[in-house]
Length: 72
Image (cartoon, rainbow, N blue to C red; front, side):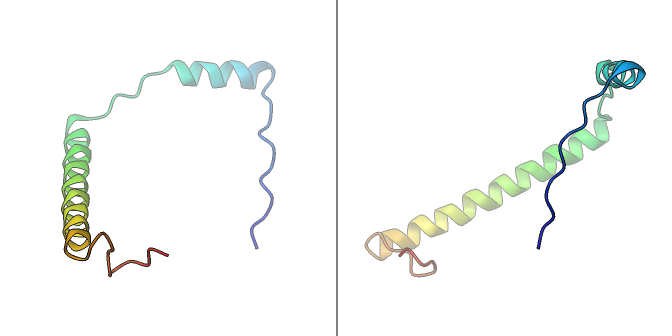
């Protein structure tokens, strides 16, 4: 069984200043990592669109019911 989620601690003093300074820092994404991430995104988007097109085709062929899924 899962444990309870603890409350987020409140930062004070130097910890709070350090946290805010860290949040202000910019960490740009390297171009090769960005290209890989976008390529993976496009791949998954096409796979989803292909799967949904197949699902719509099954529904059209079966009067609005997809036999591969439980629509109850």
